[in-house]
Image 1 (tube, one colour):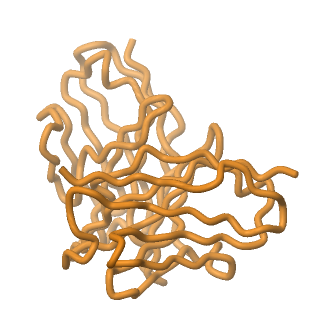
Image 2 (cartoon, rainbow over the protein chains, first blue to last red):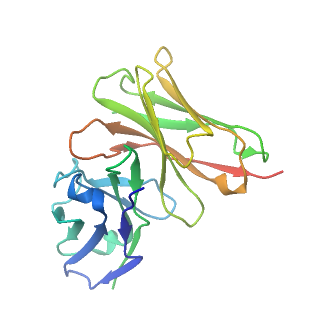
Image 3 (cartoon, each protein chain N blue to C red):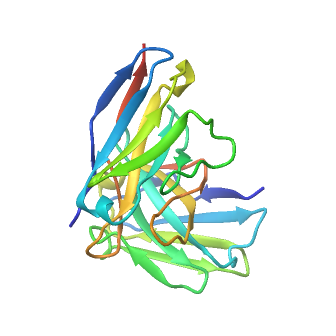
Length: 108
Length: 122
């Protein structure tokens, strides 16, 4: 079955731009969605599909796709953006959903 | 606004069946255009989708769990439920329920419950 993979950890200096990626064959067909999860809390959807931000999500969060790689970009990272980030997509072969393993973002 | 709340036992014995309920408030589970899903997260690990259900009862499941999972819906009570049979310690996790909009080119869980911790232990 298809999977989506993420780098385990990424760091960014305060105020700089960071890109978190998600790779998988299914991403050539389906857009990824992205979630932010802080310790002890439920995940929060930050990007849905092509590049749709739910209400209340800051404009510094954006999504994109190139080939089999989806990206979540945070432009001007803030201290409160330090969290785990997960992507999810639909498997292209047998109609089930998959999550990436998550990326721990550290804001320095 | 729409809220989801998980409920159920926090401790389940090995080989038994885990049963959880997700109660939806502030909106109808029978709204067209949404699935309702279960996701779990073992301690210190990532998210795993378990399965999703439409208010009509149509379901789809994670193939790795399909043989042990049943998700059902009760529209009269505005809730949906998860049953996971033959549990082992590997099923210990925080279990989340979430709303899952039906979209053409993506999948997303846009509203989540707070999650409930389930431990499998004798």
